[in-house]
Structure formats: structure tokens, C-alpha cells
Length: 173
Image (cartoon, rainbow, N blue to C red; front, top):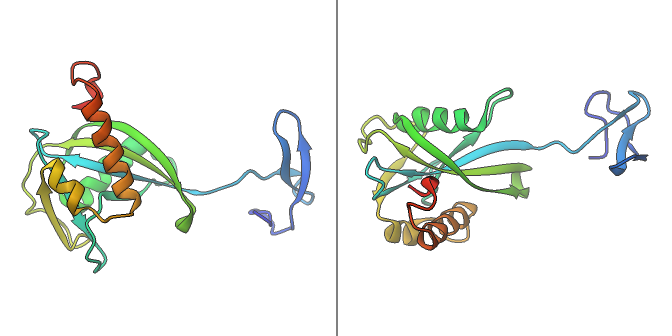
């Protein structure tokens, strides 16, 4: 960040105890820490936890996970439930955090979850989604957009699930 987000003044580096050198606005007399967008993505499971939902959006022919931005003042878990409901017409009954990764292309911290929905009926899908289908975990690994952040999240989640017994961690469905 080179300029103050409040007044537009060019920022200077200034020492802040316990933080080191931090961008500082001499006009506002305030330190300016980095800002970025926050979004969720979720590995959506069918009610029986046997199938994973992949979608296609925006005219692209790539299978991805349900995702969306977190609104100001909104908890990530609420954003997840809202996005699944808005895009798919499905209700999340359970969710748990998987991992996060910074996505430089859109200056976004992506928070990935796994979730279970109340139905496998895709007839309530909205116009935000071009295509959606349920896949077994093995099919999902093949069908998801290769090289994408969605693929990284899915593969890491499935690897975790494989390593741990379901009784060990209730978050692994």
C-alpha cells in the first residue's frame, strides 16, 4: 500500500513498537496496515456426505467450489451459508474450517470450509451458476479445475479426511 486509504497522502515507513516498520500517514497521523478482501469457498457435501458439489460460473467451462465474498460485519460462516443459499438454494446444516490461502490476483484472503447441505436437489440453483453436479470424491478430484486454488483446497481436504478416522475429528464428517 503506497497511499493512505483515508486521505490519499503518500505513506512513509515509520517504526511502531512490537510491529517494526509500518506504513504511516503523516496527514492523518495514523499507521495504515495492509488491507485486502476476504472471501469464503466451500467443499459442499450432500446430506449423506458421499458426494461433493462442483459448479461452473460466469460462462467458464471450469468446475470450481461455491465461493463468495464476506460482507463487512459478516462472520465467515454466515457468508458461507448465505452464498450456498443464494447460488444453490440449499441450506447448510454443518460446516467446519479447512484452511486459508492468500489469492494475489484479487488481493483476497480465501477461507476454505467443508460443509454439508440439507438436500441434494439442484433444481433451486440460481442464475449465478451456469452448471452444477454432484461427484464422488474421486470424480471431483478429476473434474475440478486443475491448477486452481479450488483444486488445492479440495485435494488438501480429502488428504486430511483420508489420514484421520472420522471418530477422531468430528469436523471431518
